[in-house]
Image (tube, rainbow, N blue to C red):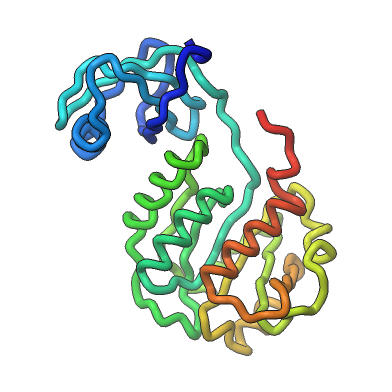
Length: 251
């Protein structure tokens, strides 16, 4: 069956997936599938849930408010990429949506907005971040979605920091310091987190707090000062290229 067609529509669901399983879509997904994408009974989509790999599924009931699908065979086995967190000071909404989408496409396993001394945003809509992450995972053929954690102060995050996870501190004061491969060479395939500050940078107090830690890597992102969203994408790309899942063999 997998050789006969490749569905162009992918949907993230929370239900368990297995051959023969029946999946009932919610109203929003049903509307998208039947009304927006104009799918009919017998049409085929790809489903994934972050646990069971992906499955081809045929549309059994093409109702615009309650579509029902039946899983056929598994299309791809479950695969998890690098254990890489992205922690960042949030920016304006449009660019925040962009960061959530691109961080998902670039393989972040966790997305966590944080409040720093110079953060200008007072609240973050985590549900909106999750919606953007799900859409990006569906479009990028990713088999899971990143964990989304609620907006929290950087000091509180660092106070509870796990000892086995390296912090890759993207410091604007390190701009142009040296080629980043030498900074990232010690990370290998271990647990890591990329930390991106606000557009005003980290305060002197925060920088001292970070540099006093043992599990810190100070990373340069080149000779120019980057916007927060650009810095996040650049750091994720560097990590994946030098020590992330881009180095692994595809499953």
